[in-house]
Image (tube, one colour):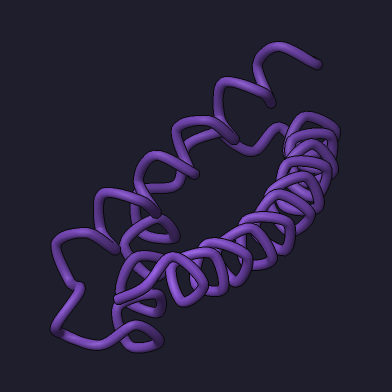
Amino acid sequence: MNTDCLNEVRAKINDVDQQLMTLFKERMLLSEEVARIKKENNIPLVDSGREAQVIQRAIQITGEEFKEETTILVQMLMDLSKAWQKKVL
């Protein structure tokens, strides 16, 4: 692989990272909204059933090939969301 090809692939990764960070920010803001709704309705912050559904749905999207990595990523996202929810409320 020559450096031009490497730079092209890296540019594509940069584009994907831009999209990911934009979506991450949107997800965090939505999780804040969820936290407010839960607080107003006296609903516990943690819902392990919902978390399992989110992980399974993500695995369906990424496929079994990335099951372990997907599980880790989604769990990290949910942990960050819960930490953010506690911080802003």
